[in-house]
Image 1 (cartoon, chains in turn brown, green):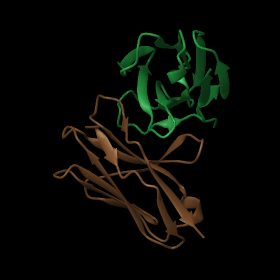
Image 2 (cartoon, chains in turn cyan, brown):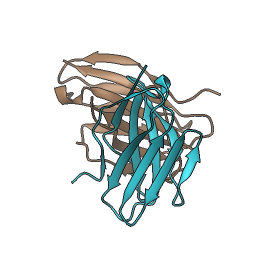
Image 3 (cartoon, chains in turn purple, green):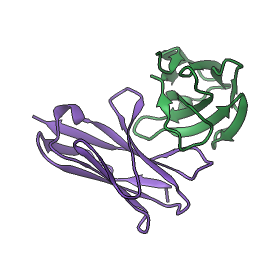
Image 4 (cartoon, helix red, strand yellow):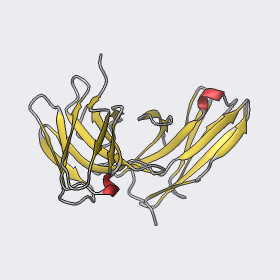
Length: 109
Length: 114
């Protein structure tokens, strides 16, 4: 089993839709959690950290459920510019970041 | 301020050759990490250096090596290239050596091995 697993996608949604991505991690010692965004043929960029109490940044909401070892990302009012691959990332403190395979999102006009 | 810079941006090599990839971190960042991203996959950790010392190594063969210089720039070397080494090689810098520091990635070097 991979350490970080994500919905494979692709997700094709119309503009204005709400879309949710899920991610599970296998190591209960994981301490830090992030969502990165990667545009086609570009480098990954940090979208947001994920905190235990959940956190929101504009149209983006991240949730963490430590008991279920589950992370989610919700995007409201999708824009064309949200089209990208979303990478779920975890680490266990003194180990390097572990990236999921990514979920591809296409927002359609 | 300049972000993480990598060179070259693209590279084509043949099997058996050697390649050196270069990375300059964001000014003030002391940690550099290298990742390999094969098409359709997430980045896979290769090495991390902090203050010129290796802090971690991923599950890659000894053909892969790296180092960090006094100015915190870094090189990734790959010997005896295989077709399967074709990938996007990403360098990332962070302020500290601890792994909950956000990573800032460079644009990557796209390596094609023929």
